[in-house]
Image 1: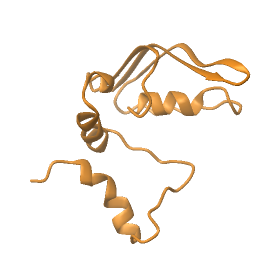
Image 2 (image 1 turned 90 degrees about the vertical axis):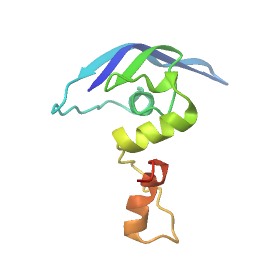
Image 3 (image 1 turned 60 degrees about the vertical axis):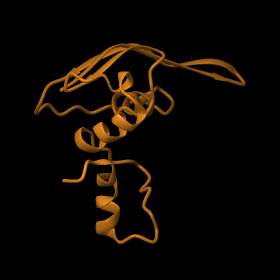
Length: 114
């Protein structure tokens, strides 16, 4: 389950302030499928990175399975992402010297060993 409550993210650039997200709220229940679409620069990537625990919002709250990934340590957040969140990036981000299987398994390094 994903709950996003009033998140905002502002970037400061050479042309001034860019409001990538401005009090965005979203609720995704288990089993639901959501598509995020819009023109280039509208905040899609910022929303996905914030929802996925990779980019802290300036305001608001993100809950993934009732856990706020921005209220835990960076190490805990990395383990949480590895266990609870999956990404398919536009770019492949593959490690060239690893096999396909090893590239797929690489994120599991952050999981506790049993």
